[in-house]
Length: 262
Ligand code: OOG
Image (cartoon, rainbow, N blue to C red; front, side):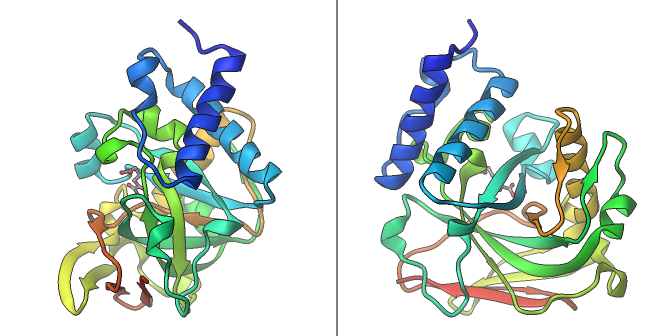
């Protein structure tokens, strides 16, 4: 059974209020088991429109499930994308407010800053690098609205891919000046190493991940735009954190990015 017009907007309110009221909710597919990926993306679009009506501005995209390990864990063969809005941007020098989250986790990522529109269905990693002005170290905070962070692929797409906050480090480099395909990464929490990885974990190269998103958007006649920021997907597993924790992500060559939490 397809999701009808009234029902999609009900789901939007369900997820949006869960986020604003910081509560976990039962996943959408418990009620609508046949929710398709296309319907889920359409709900995601409407969720972003809802945020825009409240004053948020769309500023870019995020990729999810870009590592083979995470895809296998979910039993899927595809990445997913969601939207970033300006109210999601955190600043390194301002502690994050823990009470604004449900059950947050932090992921190390490489951010892309796009300087030219790009659209198509045969876009390559090289095309993405050509339109990328800078790359920078980033941390994404994911905070699924679903109970115990458990969901199907359709659920997580509808929930804007668990997006909550993100932070960008201060070292911005041209992708021409480093080997973006194999950047080592160390993530530590309160001085203890909690994850290590390589940017190669992101579909072999983070630009391949961005190209995947452009091609996926291309199927709907959309693309990425000049001025957008794109989080290319997690380089390692996400880690949970608590109030007063400090998390630092250090990339070889690309520098570091960190946050503390109140
Ligand atoms: C889905 C989003 C994960 C990534 O980079 O893999 C994600 C989840 O909540 O696991 O952003």
